[in-house]
Length: 126
Image (cartoon, rainbow, N blue to C red; front, side, top):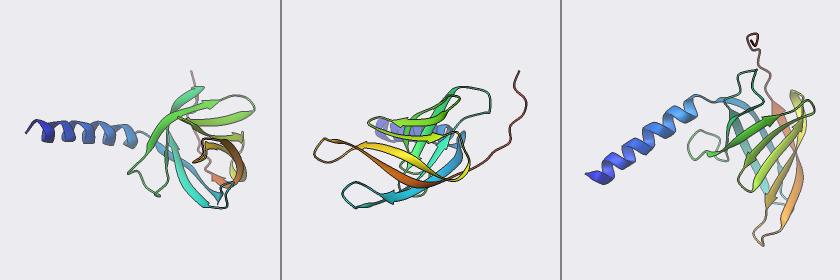
């Protein structure tokens, strides 16, 4: 019974966390070893803050999201998920993003992926 309650608490806390995020875009390309990669990424950005919660999903859905952080500056839009990161210039539409990750041998790699960044309109900030 205790394990069922624990599972339900984790499910509902994860569900409410991921539902507060919106789809920011998707990327696809190849890793350094030639393996294909594709993912969608999300954030709780509201148009005003300089950092927000973020998530990445490699299975094209909200199940199995990896949680991280989104940081914004005048020149870049960065998503960090543990040992991986995705960095763009501040732009929307079809663009490229730099994806940094650790390969199976433990080496740091960086590849450029083709991405589609969504454009949202936000209310005025205080």
